[in-house]
Length: 123
Image (cartoon, rainbow, N blue to C red; front, side, top):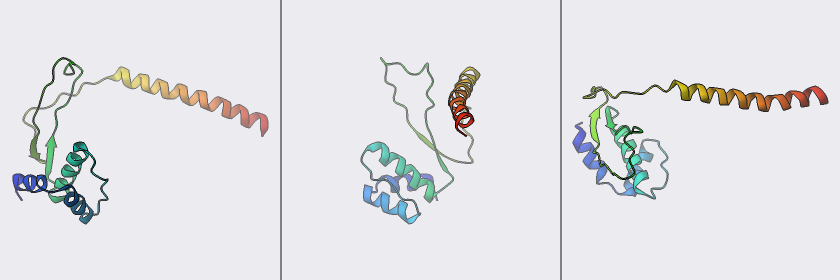
């Protein structure tokens, strides 16, 4: 099955048709109340119809977010086994991870000490 007919077929469906087709695949869709939900459910339906289709989305970087400028980008559809045209670089933020790990450790100790004192004192 070709990519474009599937996408155009799903794009022409009404909200009720999208929900009923998703139910046919065994998925219980939420009510469609806005364009974001509609877009997500259309993508989900396309993936049910042809699992080899994927959607490329723009990856936002901190440098990209500029309040004064609004940039419109298009979404290109490709097959899952197709390699991307250019690799997307992923920045490694080890400082953020270690900070998160530290926070989890501190919260664990803070909640564990009163529990241990309670058990030691009352049991």
